[in-house]
Length: 426
Image (cartoon, rainbow, N blue to C red; front, side, top):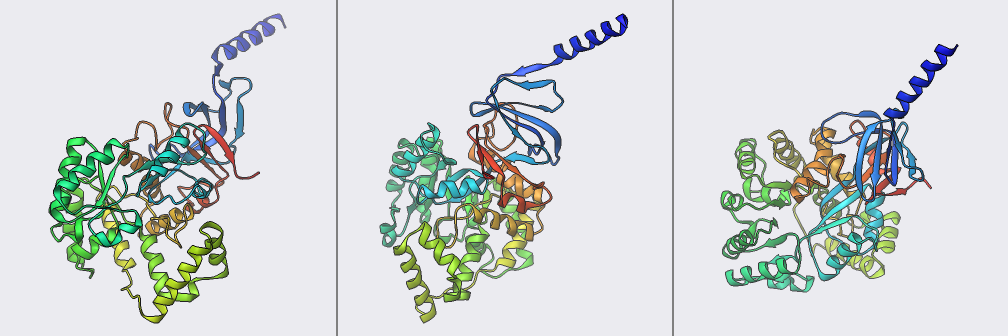
């Protein structure tokens, strides 16, 4: 009995010496972890978070314990992955933030900046406002003086292009976004390289010389449909796919297709007044207000009268091109153009994921577009996009495995935002 007691004490001593207490504020315990470093699920993991940073991920075997007083969120049977990133939207009110978070979106790239957006960004960063991390472009730089009333900055000359790059860079915008005629575009790109600020946005004036556009080194080009209009002359042809894909791939430029935006435009012209269901009307009234609802009704009347027309965008062709780009290894980004009257912040990202899935892209590659690849294009690969020690604690917890069931991300159980647990089940 004495010998047995000594053995037990020795085993207890070994167990104690192997136990490590982790200084942390929050633990997601015993969770199935999808780090997005590779296509796998690590079962029974503990994720330790201190402040807004992940300090450790470890097997949930009792050898790593949280400091007394730390908050413990039971992840048993659930799945944890990095928070989603919408790489093209337009913030038009603080109400956007809760809707984005409720859909697992913890970071966004805003594509039309303003002083108000910069202030919201800074308030989120200092913790005085709850919302996804904002990476914002400059105000939209455009070639057409007729749309100045939308808050766009109009640039028509090369000198104006250089001046505005310096102004917006000095004001603290992360990216320059532009749609210009060719000569001002080239001047803008040259000055942006001088200032080491990325340029994103539309192709210049639907320029026919796409190889020149791609050679300029834009970080990302938005709206695959615009590229389709030029490269395919609006009509899909199989023999044009490979040359187009090779041009994009060799440039290193990322593409944000935004198929949900084109789909919603088709729906408006196809359905006309039938699109305005009671549910949609209530959502528009709730989020945008009566003035925007009335303006939308007027827009529908214009379409029904024939005063406003458009050719339906070729979504099946876009799906084929998206698949070819993905197969070639082009970085595709998930963006939504949310901010339009029928494209709501948050849910629209899941709709875009569904279009990628329809194209035949695997769930893993879709999730890469929304996490790791997005972080790389943001230049935030050291802080975002995967679950690793030292990275920001922006995470989403789901009921099912999103590698198998993308739809589980539409109703997350909660998110970790800047290290704080937000529970959606309460």
